[in-house]
Length: 83
Image (cartoon, rainbow, N blue to C red; front, side, top):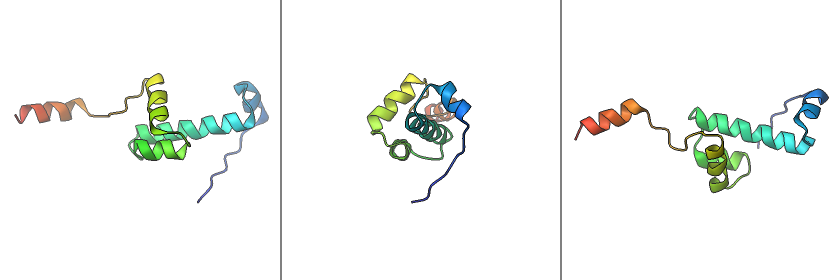
């Protein structure tokens, strides 16, 4: 497995109000969310990446108002007009 090291200052850690472990977990989660949002990884892979169950990850996406299903309105219109 590959690893990625991201340096951060103590000031950022203090401002977050979190322990180093909590902050690193949050950063990992936020990276997984963004990769999912961009369509680079599936929901399952994003959840696995941040060490969450799929349902928990989906609930967190909902809390952040990020849609779990990402269908473009144009795509829906095209599918409906085919009928």
